[in-house]
Amino acid sequence: MIIRWESDHDYVLVHIHQDMFGDWIFSRAWGQIGTQFGGLKHILAEDHGQAMMWLGDETTIQASRGLRKVLEVEAESAEGQAAVRQLSLLDSL
Image 1: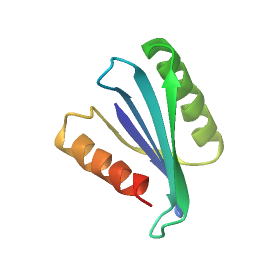
Image 2 (image 1 turned 90 degrees about the vertical axis):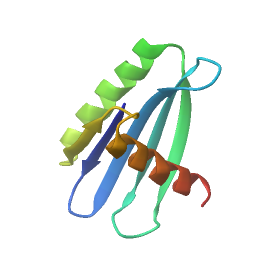
Image 3 (image 1 turned 90 degrees about the horizontal axis):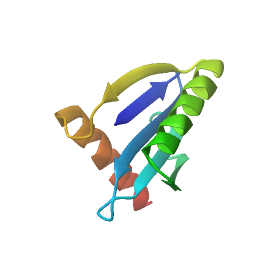
Image 4 (image 1 turned 135 degrees about the vertical axis):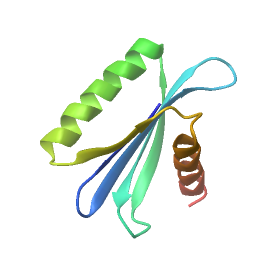
């Protein structure tokens, strides 16, 4: 699952997925739109439920900051694959 929030200047992108060992990973990327300022963090969740709880927290936080949800897709979709490629580019910075 991939979800992206945006304001006029900032973005936050969350990717929840399982790795090849079956562990649930909560990845969060953030930054300023149009710049390379930002960051990327990967957190290992105990299970899918914990990752979804973190997603609920993230949704509340971003709404309180005035960011609006602009994307919610499954990672296997074309839009999801494009978003994952963006995360991969951030990993190399």
